View (cartoon, rainbow, N blue to C red):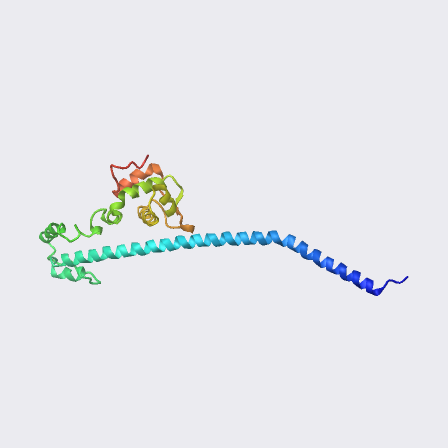
Length: 228
């Protein structure tokens, strides 16, 4: 007896539909874990990028504030120079007032005039001569009232191989802006290196060498013990 072609067509159609459904199901089973893994990796990468972006934005804000502070210091130094210029010999006045090239040393630059400058140094607005002209003044003036915190931060990072602003922030319990400033000061002191990937810095001074390094820089205080 010959099979009905319509029955064969129906059976073939059902088999094809079942095969398609099976293929789709298996494809979903195979692809689902890979899709989930890719989504998780993308989410983690996005979170890391956001963290890095937020860190760089905070650091940019700190650098902007630091630049403003330096500009203020420069304005104060210019004011000191303008005040001191009135006591300078005529050949030196253009240099103090912003001349681009230094004149030849005048013959009038005598011991008497140098003694006058020493006498006037204590009367300069803002106190003393320019920070860079005082032994150790440049760095010490940059540190200012943060000397105690700087020593505390130095003692904390000297026990590590790498450090960062957030780590200093946690170690000595200060704000992020203050921690970033202390980190920059530590770099100027030669205690940490320049920024590396993700804002970390290599620590260059071991804890046992720290007191000698600080003493050489003139950064000492009797209230803090850097070896404890």
